[in-house]
Length: 360
Length: 219
Figure 1 (spheres, rainbow over the protein chains, first blue to last red):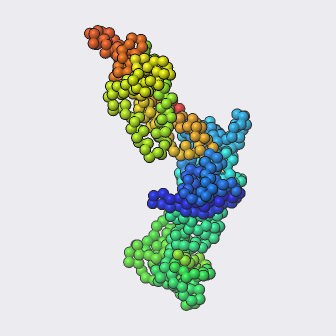
Figure 2: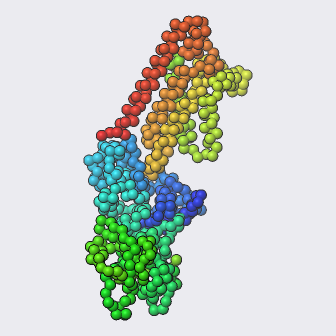
């Protein structure tokens, strides 16, 4: 199972130039809107023609600008799940699912449709029209329809973006199950990093039309290569950095010196830490050798969600106003309540193995 | 009734040639497409006498087009039912093409693309997705060309003349009767035409709406 993509396409004001490959494990295409994710997906499906490059699926060339090959969408056997599902409104659920099935006897077709619908737990809705289904049901019908052509690759374009949040969890679990039993290559487009992380093994991060990072998801989250990728993967705290001796860097924007566990060959440009890795304690008396990566901090502002709070913190001195802060920390409410009434400054700890460096 | 026969024939022919023209107008990306659209829309603004004049001259025995026709069919088109049909089809072309093209245009592109990725050919996509989703446009085009043909006058008079049983349509007949002072007969014919047109339109629009409701508002 392999999908190889190396394409270039220019449209006014935008240039897409990407190269990536997917094998049996789901590949996530992650990036902000306008980064070219959907365009890349459409090129694989044959709905968009690149200017240059090559697309091959299991060794079969779908597009090759040099050899002038451009297999039309209908012959690519690539299943595409559209962002809004694109179900045919004038056909029933069963008719939608059987739309792309190869010619066979009515009995045979009916049996296969029933099988496909059973796989997504929608047997009972076979005769309904799409307009009468919920968003989650529509998504499952679209998935069953895309898989009914037994595609060599399955492309999912933001499959959860049109759904209410409370529906996503269950549907995502179901999608993961479906993908596990599906034999082909899967490409999953998303701007939601947590979703992409849960569904995919490998990630490709797109930024302004080109690949900013690709590799195993853990690797990309632990050590994003650039500031851009760190941002896309949800990192919120950055500071310009200068390397000192003995594994230390000076965080210029934060006005402090940090020990960093990460081995880093190039001179780092930035130092960063994720908001939920920032730890906060009430102040205690410490001996100087016990102060590593721990700094006095003041609260500039606070935002809450039902179970968590985000604290905007300033290191070294009290903030002048609520926008004057260095770091954001995300912690559970329970923890927040344990020190919220204690006198400031508190202590912020940027653990050495959580801090990472960025070359660009 | 000659008018009815003419209108039904025109609507049928326009459906047959209007669908491909409308499809091309709705989906072609040719940069000079607007020129074709302008030509199709010409009868909307052209006085019917101008169109009738060109048809009369062009299809007449002195013009090469008319000569070719004569060589093949043994007679010229003007002042026959065939000539009337040709003139009416051209004159009503925009009334059929524009609503059908608008209907095609209104079909969500993503549904068309979905059909392609599911392996459907262009023809299959047209028959199974585009056409069923634009029935309202097709029916409107059909009805408008039908109604427009029933009511036309200028082109008929120019191309068809006024031959009883061959080219004398209802609208010409009313004109004739008014000219000879038979206001009672003219009145009756006009009323019949009015009621007939209204009933046809009402029936078509009414059933059309119900047909669409089948999948849009079920349950």
